[in-house]
Length: 175
Image (cartoon, rainbow, N blue to C red):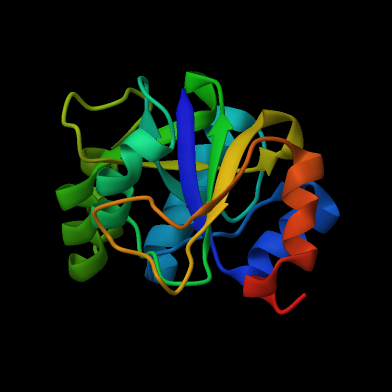
């Protein structure tokens, strides 16, 4: 399963240094709901970490997913969009509109109705993972100031961890 997430500069550099990441929520989960999500993911994976939020894709590349990513995840200039390959059984899934409704309702009692271990048939799916490691990395790109939300021109693309480490020296990161 292709798992795509967005990280700001600091989080991306932390991932590069540690070669793994957790605690990339992207949405403002109320504490009671976050606690329930952490428990649900711990039952799935055995790990007790704050999750990484992203979207999933079974077909296509990171660039072919751009419209979906920009509609479902908060992306801004200077962010790094990452694609990882994760096992289906490492993820918890929720239909985007239901996740957003849960965030606004703040009712943890609805969490089992929103998040499941099976991917929803709906194309607008949010996924959560406990931990994303560098060995699952596939590609990434930096969103530049000239970014146009409906196209990819002007984006730097990275396809390996060694190329990704060049982010430290890129001009978008002030390097």
